[in-house]
Amino acid sequence: MSEYSSEPGAGVFSLSQIRHLMRVEFGRAQRYGYPLSCLVIGVDRLDSLRDLYGYEFRELVLAAAVELLQQETRTCDYLGRLMDDRLMAILPHTTSEGAQAGARRILAAARKLAFTPQGAPLSVTLSIGISHYQDDNTLFFDSLVEAAEGALAEAARAGGDRCVHRVPGPREARSTR
Image (cartoon, rainbow, N blue to C red; front, top):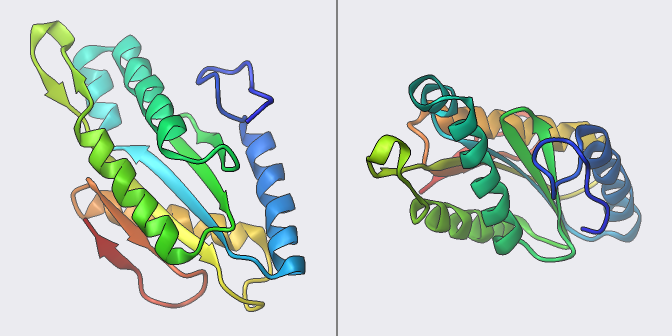
């Protein structure tokens, strides 16, 4: 990533930038027939952490998540802030299996993050929604993002600390830990 946003969460693309990059990569994947995966990542129970330890701690946790994602993704991948509490990674030339393996690596690395708010040890976990472009049945890049967001919501509802894969369209999601 060469052009970072000056928004909070420096080192990641802004919402408009990441959506533009997704649109461009989706068009390339369609045109040249290569795989494309999308991850939407959230810190589990982030609002509760903010309520317990304050806004600054919440931002510290998000910054640690960004740093972890930068370490665990390739230089050709794109990382952006979707919403105040969600991140998105675009993984060009990455199959569904590759995205799921990468998501499991990210989850394992996140479990090792350690914080000490108010002097007490605390660990955090992530939830990850995964989708991928598989064929010409996926017509719009938005459907990839929507599928990944739906998978993230399902992962969080299931207790977090997991990734859920969802194919854009009416198919069932699959959960892995």
